[in-house]
Length: 381
Ligand code: HEM
Image 1 (cartoon, rainbow, N blue to C red):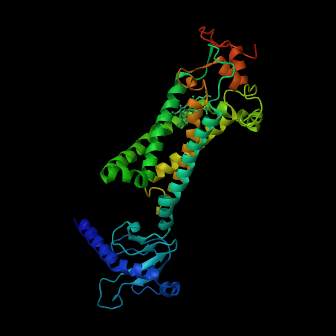
Image 2 (image 1 turned 90 degrees about the vertical axis):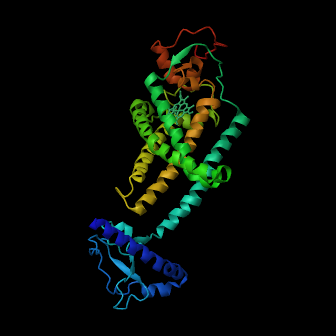
Image 3 (image 1 turned 120 degrees about the vertical axis):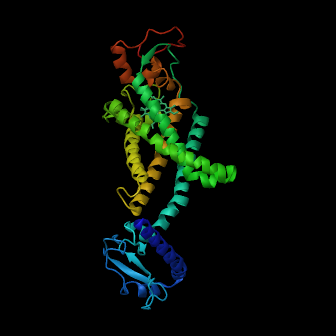
């Protein structure tokens, strides 16, 4: 009871302080630096030293601070409601609170303005350009170059590519990533893009669902990324043979597009994407959980930095995944079945993953075929 009265009194004092000080702050923002400097460092009349206990027993801050302003009339010895404002070493403008939580004394965090500019402007531009640019580039690629075809046509014989665990984990990761991406985009672009279309009430419901979805689906995503690492890290280790694929960007920049004899289970492009997903996913998870537990590890400044990192890595990862989804579906004939049925056509395997195909054939894992093959032509035979 005593505590809540004290807290209420503290809150009341803080509010009064805010009301009194806000006009002062606004007015001062327009004043010259010289005028401000003159006040910075003025001895704190009745003010406390850094780290001194606040009236309510709380710690005001374990760093040195400069008094900025005194409330009008504060110098008067009769005034009990003496209000002081301080600038701490890390740039925070603070008042005084009589409750134990010193971060509630922060009135203004000037760096927050830069963060807000990033959140409301820069992130939207960077994210928008990345994502829309990738979609347009892929659409143009499809329009002018068309799908990557199986040159030899479908043979009708298949090779096992991914087992049930690999496929199940891929779709768990993929589903959760897509929910995380869409909910992240709703939170980022909802206001400028959706508000004019669906109005405040619907956007509120949607944003809240997006926020909950974002939190909950982070769990299967983290599990999926961890299992993906365990399943595929070995086959994604870089090797000298990757260089041949990189030099021609997998045949896009010339070379023999129809056959990649040096490529094992994954080509260099897939390996890059794999490590990008694992490392980017880990960075997204760490930064995301730090944001989900405010002030647990870092203060407001640290959280702003983690938010910026989280959002930028997310935007780049979404871009990469859009390209991956394109290649794994419409972009390349014969690719989707690898994650659908788990098997790929023998000619697809021969053309895109020559060395891996040879290994599978030598192990006797190529099916005898169902007679539906078109050309059945395999340059190796
Ligand atoms: C609708 C969405 C998706 C489709 C259609 C799709 C399709 C595919 C296909 C067909 C493969 C097999 C490629 C091969 O046989 O070489 C594959 C592999 C893979 N997918 Fe996806 N995928 C999707 C979403 C995702 C997402 C969201 C992630 C990660 C967050 C992801 C990560 C991977 C990884 C790491 C591999 C193995 C390496 C690679 O092929 O790059 N996929 N995917």
